[in-house]
Length: 136
Image (cartoon, rainbow, N blue to C red; front, side, top):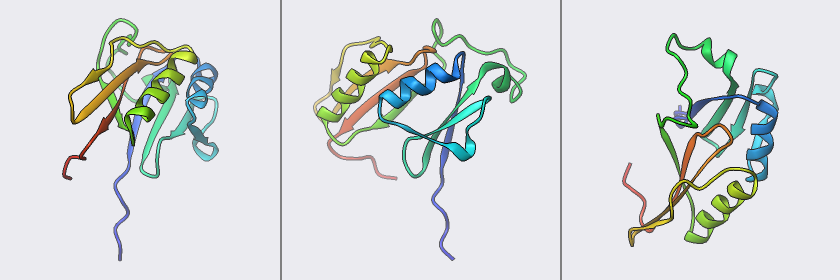
């Protein structure tokens, strides 16, 4: 019996679910309707990477800790790989055009090229092209 590949579900609190869905749709992402309702939306990054955009009151039901305001505090940076430097630039440019912001300039380390953006809720995203992928 073949094991299913491990998946990752990043859960992010959002203030306005419809605005967040429109923002990420403008970046080219789609949503799985089976796991999307008024409390949250399942954004599909790849066959094994998903982001659950959860309205803040619903998100609070999963933790006893206070929520971090990602517009003023950094808690995590979600980094996604891209297939080329051009793909990095295209995605970040789309994010900025859709209402996000670019908090830092591009970084070129020779074997790795990175740019990032903040989404509408201030969550930090890095997009990176690596000439050689890390070993699993």
